[in-house]
Length: 497
Image 1 (cartoon, helix red, strand yellow):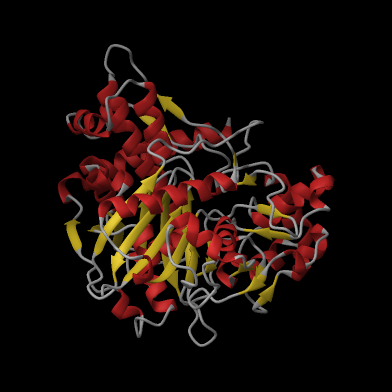
Image 2: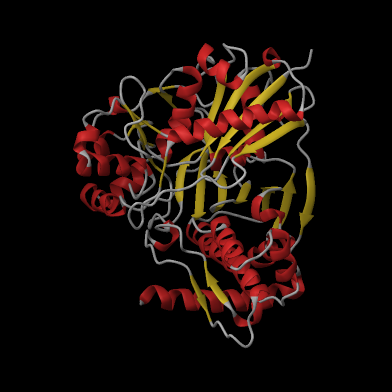
């Protein structure tokens, strides 16, 4: 009888599912749903909401698709792991009913609330205790609900992150992890407990959050009802849960100081692990508990996020009549580095932390109707995204002292583009390693650790393969440095307007 591990990745664009053969570590089936991107509702400028029921429905659909890829028995699954979009807010009542649409990660409505808390509590206090400004994170989103929808707030039994809600739908248990609390700025790193002073300032108590469970370990058992919907066996343990970026780092075996992960899905992220209590004084990058943090071995993840990455590339594809990403990439590849002077700022998906929580929008600069065509636009977008990532990397390197020479990424999303891969290596100056994995596979591997099928982390990475390594082109290094400085100069003048 075969033994499998099941991983889910609850994104804002789709829900992915992966089935791993536990013994070999090989992914034997994978699926995502829906075929087109899940909608994000924006009833007001700067808002971003999704219906949590949609996540569940797409999770069910993706699970059913696995059966069409491989024949397996429901009771052959050892455990389930969950990866999820970070920083969101799901509000439920005592019966677990969702009270309003989820306020997701790229929603900007609570920026001012977080800034006011940062000032009122003291910047030094917040940075020393929370390692971040309260900013536009989950705690501030909950405060927004309290201020603006008191009729909703008074009915809230538990405030959860997106992954907590999915775990609840699977197990009927309302729980949260310390790592999850840290990503919502609900965790005091200095005291290793809840962010009580922030809660008091915002006017709610810690009991509004679910009970704590470990990142790795049994978090509940699959209920009979959920098992029927998914066509699985009841009582399968859910034994791992983490935000998408810490989980992506795990999937790439990024667990120790100096190791760096990169993603370029809807947003673009650089995520580095440290054993130090480290923070950016301006909160342009953010520090959270990493998945393998323990009292005896501190592990924090420093996260740089550019909101408008894959979503920018997708917007260009849809609105410039490209037949698909392959056509975009081929046209971009035929354009010289620098896109004939065309410059792109990928800041069109909500308030950007790296821009000190400003929401400035995207912009094309130097567009010349006689020179630039779709190929230049396609290349300028990919280069602009990498320049934005380098802009944030300078904070991590120069202000936080992080050493970044090798980046690991999964073979997915924008890292499928040969142009993007090469530009990433050339502009950052780092070696780029591409692995045959994704977030759903990482969640499945981690579930094997949580269920104690694997004795340690090392065992869980059996079957993980590096498929390509790209080194920066030294002949282009000086040229890209000049082009980046030109991009940065234009950005800083744009931000001063």
